[in-house]
Length: 114
Image 1 (cartoon, rainbow, N blue to C red):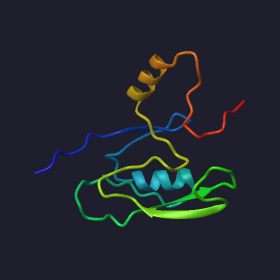
Image 2: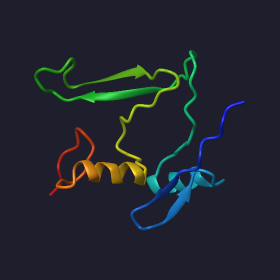
Image 3: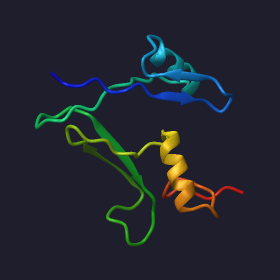
């Protein structure tokens, strides 16, 4: 029998909080993001989940593809942070601030903001 994952708390910029244990979590997230959202637990194993991701390659020298969109199957039991939404735990944020106290945190590949 597998262990149940602990609940995660999600805090929105306006201070509203939800948890992964809420029965209406997907409806709340869908309303906030303006599109259907599903929350699922990643499962490990050899079988395919059928989940795919797509990536846009800008027209830049040195890339494998240029000005095109490719798609690929995501390996079962894995997670790739490839979307525009980044969910981080407060423990992770505290650790990143300790490692890099002088800078503003932003995801790799994101354009700096003023």
